[in-house]
Amino acid sequence: MVWLAKVKIDRFGRILIPKEIRKRAGIKGEMELEIEIKDDRILIIPKNETLEKRVDEVISYLKSNAPKPFVSEGGAEEKWYSAEFSMRKIGLRE
Image (cartoon, rainbow, N blue to C red; front, side, top):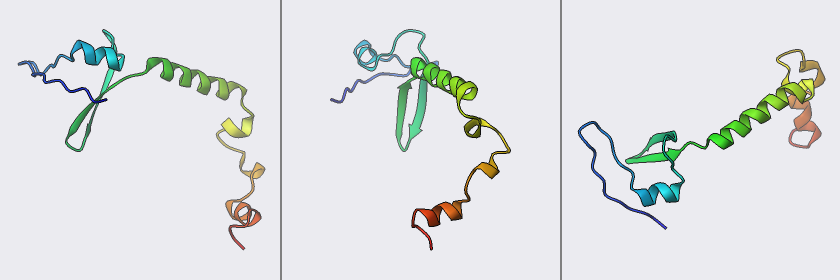
């Protein structure tokens, strides 16, 4: 379902998002929004802080608990097969 509302920009460049649209989009007071321009449209996207927090927690967990070849910055080259060898092994190159 598409919701359409006509709003005006005030003299300071602000718009008021109607209550019904805020409710349906899950937008609450003091919430951060991302504004994106796509072709000739302006998209307003509620920032999902809960999801971002969970992603940060997973990254932190993996940095401290994942096997070192997956998180180490260097020195892991000798532990991996070359791309060429791997492609031959799975039959994508001869």
